[in-house]
Length: 421
Image 1 (cartoon, one colour):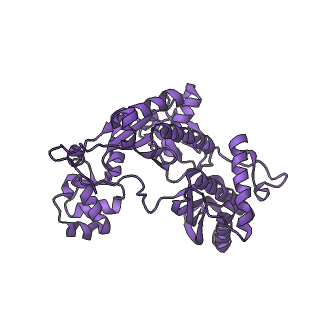
Image 2: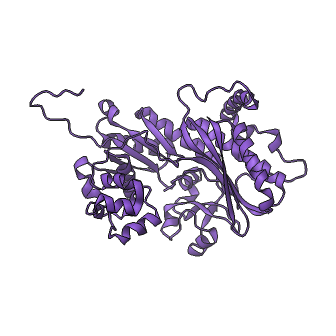
Image 3: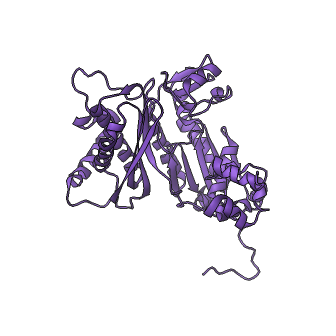
């Protein structure tokens, strides 16, 4: 029960939910590590015929280049384009430094991708001041200690904080007071709301809703017919009454890796080897993020663009690379005859949950039981000696088979989810 002293004014509502997003993260890391790239149109991605832009610096964006754009299109927009092969392990290393810095100031941090996190700054006010001062401190330390730009949005709602950080880019800060939330959102297109994709936008436009402010003029029943059960949450967001804080993750939250190759993979054993590497990598992401996954997804794409996505749900959530490997390999073996040539492969872990303070529950029987101790030891070794210092024997290429292409032209590895704005 909350008690209030008679006659005392209630405490003003503090916009203490912050969303911190690193600006053009992959490209910014490359420019920081190689200052000669500063001011140039830099993109991270594959330089081959099938290369895709994974990240673009702001000078590149000024030319119209965006993430997920075919590299051939980016080259036409900027003939002087500088293409840098991705270094996903480097980005994860820097990501850990960023998150450690955030936790040094704010105890309650919810990392949602390699380059962004939500923070509840309210408990830190006693030490560091109001949310805008905390946001400024975080941005300043990231700039001074890590040499990277970042943007922060703040609000009484996580959804509005994320919208505010996007409006603050690049390298800015925007804190929305509680009483100004509805006015801030009103003129913005409905597409700024997380979960409102192109299909939902078209459905809303058919009932005359184009901006967030328009939502307030539509009956909830009409809104529900247009976009389904998320209508109530969208309405609360539009009228400024949403107060969703940390710990409320979207259902499709996932972690994963995708790779596209210049040369199609035609050997089923080679595909198996590479998806095994991916499964181990995804498992390590899970362990580092403190998650376990109940479902693993295998994605395959052929040279003609045909895509197969298959999933397997486990009886117990896990962060074990061995368990993920067993399932994705089984999925591949069932589909290998349908996909004789593989252009892209991806492994993704979904239905995530917190591993809890004690980590993943111990498995007492089966092959995975012994792998838990082994994978923990491998994590410690990789932390000390580098990510490539250890690998499964089954993922090593046979003698004379040529080099292993880990990250370079035409070989794109992207963490999922990724904002990289």
